[in-house]
Amino acid sequence: MKYHYYPGCSLEGTALEYNLSTWAVMTSLGAELLEIEDWTCCGASAADSTSYLLSLALPARNIAIAEKTDDVKDILVPCSACYLNLKKVEEKTKGAPEILEKLNTILQEDHLQISGRIRVRHLLDVIVNDLGPQAIRQNLKRAFSGFRIAPYYGCQCLRPYAVFDDPEDPRSMEPLIEVTGAEVHPWKMGAKCCGASLMNTKMDMGLELVAAILQGAKGADAIITVCPMCQMNLEAYQQKISKRHKENLQMTILYLPQFIGLAFALPEQELRIDLNLSITDGFRKKLEMQKQDI
Amino acid sequence: MHVARNLIRSNETVQACVNLAPVQEMVRACIQCGTCTGSCPNEFAMDYTPRRLWRMVLMNQSEEIFQSNTFALCSACYCCTLRCPRGLPLTEAMEALKQIAARANFSQYKNSVQFYKTFIQSVRRHGRVNEMEFMTLYFAALKNPLTPLRFASLGMKLMSKGKVSMLPPIRRERPLESIFRNVEALEERL
Image (cartoon, rainbow over the protein chains, first blue to last red):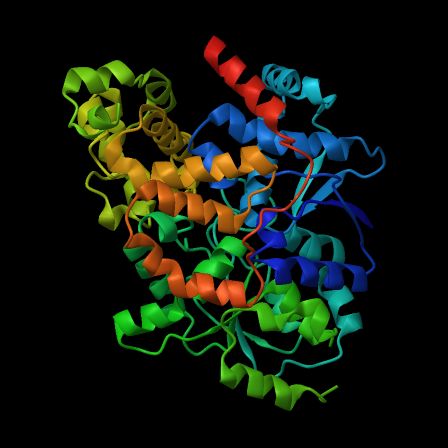
């Protein structure tokens, strides 16, 4: 199984552990990742908010570079915001030669071209549908029995394009959690918005949105995310939110491949849990106790 | 220019620098059912509900729209777009309003507009965004010494983990320059 790989800017910086753990888990599962050569920013939510054409042209450049490799059709994207931006190009150019032509006019100077043959895939989609819980079971080295895990999907891997899960009531992470022996935390917050960049532009509002998610996760051992923006919002402001709400809302937040990697007992330097901003002492202790289980 | 930006604009000047026609096109078929408002996670903090905003767009009430916080509070969760019974691209319509505000430089959206503009600046310069440079540019543009303080402890934490660096990555010079230039040229023709 071969995929083009688009990490995106966050995965080189604040979400480095998402990048490393994605490589580690995908390689363990026998997939081959070809990082798009000289990839550039997808525009994040900033291009959307400044120019529509730019918001398509920036991701299109990366798709065009991927298209140069003939035999690989799918681009794997772990960041939900990057995923949506790239997916948008795939969707908006479908049966719309005039948009394709516009984009190609913009790309021409760099000797790049897109034809629309590339499929953009989210990491969660690939793990669930191409690899599946069965493949995970075969690599298990540690049981997560006694753990309760809250799957958090966020928005942009689900909406507006409902590709691999129910966009209102997503369940795709559940079999991945259950196969490790953990229990799925029952909650209604899995597809609620974390506020995205509102945390930077309107912090008071962002804090309230995240507070509701952390409150919903009470009783779980960890929340699992599939987006660097969600991860940052959920993990970075817990002290501030706990103080505001006068309750302890500290919670372990892990990226999905970090969680799977722990179940595979992959080496620490491949999962980099030390880079996460919120791993509670309770979680660490529980993990230590489970270590020699299988 | 700077002084003019800080004056409250009269309706005529707002009308003059705003073309709502493309947004009106997007929401023309709105039946005012309010599903968007009911689906919006941020509606509690908005001065006009999304449903009301669409009506105001169709009624060409530029002045009120660009004094409200409604579109600036959209966090692009796409719940309204998903549920709209008319299938309207409502999140894109919110983005179109953000784009108008960014182009017109309306001062009340300074935070959001500067956030996006400095982000894009960093991308244009390096091809990829350098998170540290971007946040530094953003704080500088806001000219408010208190804003960075709210992020100070997070910044220290990220630096101590080596997740952000002070130096932008060294790469090929301005790999996106031609794309930015060509987008601008095409947009001018529109």
